[in-house]
Amino acid sequence: MTFFLELKEKLKSFYESYSAYLNPVLKFGLALAVFININMMLGFLPQLNSVFVVLILALLCAILPVTAVTFFGCFLIVGHCYAIGIEVAAFALVLILLLMILYLRFSRRDALALVLTPLAFQLHIPCAMPVAYGLTGNVGSGVAVSCGTVLYYFMHLVSDKAVQLQDGEIKEIGQRLQTILDGLVRNQEMWMTIIAFVAVALAVFCIRRASVDYAWTIAIFTGGVLYLLLMIVGGFFMDMTSSIVWLLVGTVVSVMLMLVLKFFVFHVDYSRAEYLQYEDDEYYYYVKAVPKIRISKPERSVKTIEVDSEMTDDLEEQLTKSLKDIHIQ
Image 1 (cartoon, helix red, strand yellow):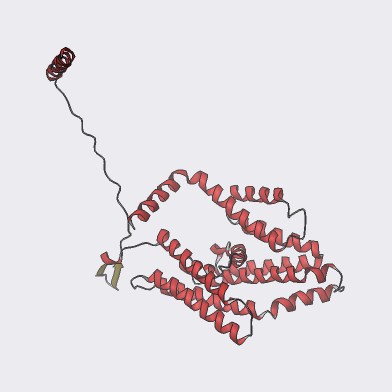
Image 2 (cartoon, one colour; image 1 turned 30 degrees about the vertical axis):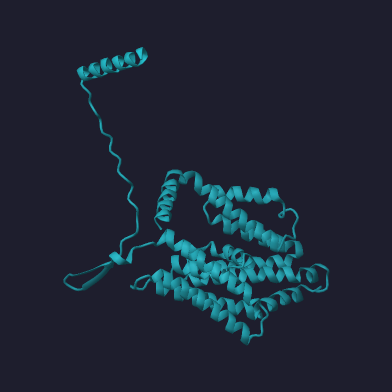
């Protein structure tokens, strides 16, 4: 454990020293992953599916605020939908605007959840989203990840129905829009996932704020188990054929990632917790103080040894004499 604590402090110190250079690199990497995922799921418009376009957009995100990743990601989604049909692009634009209004109303700071949630689904670790936002967000974070879930299933629906919409099997505009709307609204798996995400995010948020020892660890494992139970029970009653193996593996990986997040964000020593009590004219206050685990840097002291000039001369004479004796022998 000491090794990991030292590594944490070194990484923290390194980031503080080079944050001006690391932040653009991290935003570039995040944007690149999000854009590549969108192009892999949709990719209907060749101009937007180009590597150069993705790199240019990622470079722009590197110098712009992090919310630019969400803006350009939505731009790519609408652009790919336009390649299928203008009505599909209009539906996508209206849906994205409604989702933005919804999550901005409840959790303005969680804008990235809109494009990170589809990426988590593609990586088979969707459980990581509600647990992560429950740990670091607020009570409205479940709405943000739910909006990202709707966007993911919309992208999945467009990808599945693209052939029918492009080949003219569904000719009328109203019928096309009705097909997309029905496919989204009647998607039982999407609604079940939204319920699971909201329940997990709320449970994790409430537990990690509780004044109990190891609250974050309990919240992480509770979120993982609750997500597994809700998805398995919901899939059983709705006769869904989703793979339990992928669900189990993805949940375990998500829990491990959240433990890493906890180590860097909230790593404390409960064995040294202190309980304080004080009062004022109106209230009694009960405070629990838990110290963070840190490794103090070793203090180095430099000692200066002063040598007398006469002593130095004597040492030189003795050394010269010894060398002569050795040479004579």
